[in-house]
Image 1 (cartoon, rainbow, N blue to C red):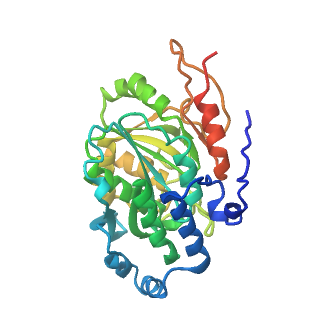
Image 2: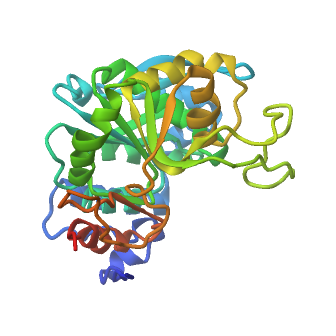
Image 3: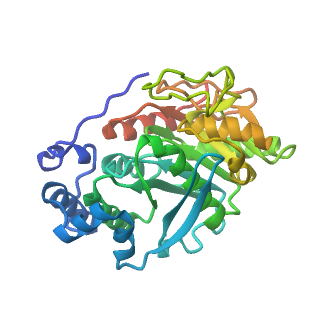
Length: 354
């Protein structure tokens, strides 16, 4: 099944690519102010002092922030990479995970305002009880966007912001920071879902399958990773390729079984085990292989294939498992246009067993 979304008809919004797909706001409110400020900042830049300060030293920008935001120091320790970074601790984070069952972490670029808005208006709009969604954002390479992110957080209270420079090569560090945030502020949550920002998830259906399938597996072993498990992946050895990994970082011919990157589900015990064992492993940028394959193998974390639930593409199907009236399909993958999120989510959520 294929669906197509329609671009925004608002010419004021559509002329700016970073707002593609953002809903128009009908009345002057905080969101209207947010939109106007985004346009103004994107076109004109921030105050010259702030820009100069940010360009000279990222840390100074964080220290100069005059809001109630606090900055907590964390450490990343791999065999070949050690670094200290800071994460924002917002007032809204206090007791945020009380009675939470599922924490969803969505790594996203600082500039992806339209995608985050589309997710908030589609699959993360009406969250089931006990579910929290957080967008993981590193420090923007363009410092103009820093205060835009702080304003976005003030409006939506759903960002995990750190001062790791936000590049693809640093994605594994962003995910590490999200795991550390969970272990610090949301330690008792049972499950952690890592979902890329080009995925669509039916969270209500995911909770059903957690309760009726994953939970029974967890009774036998608590440290688990669920996903589309790749069993015969191999390292790319050609320098310059996107997923290049030299033999000095991973000498083996094949990767251990790992969960395909767009989406995987971890138990809280698995996240703890990953962080506890990362110092014994050489890091490389392939985040899914690193955490759910190499470190998981080192830590003795079981990986369970549930590819019938986590789709590796954007095709809809209404397949169902025996003795269940709930469709198996939980997620779709491969969406870069913000206008597609709502129609595809509605179609996913409307699936029925046949």
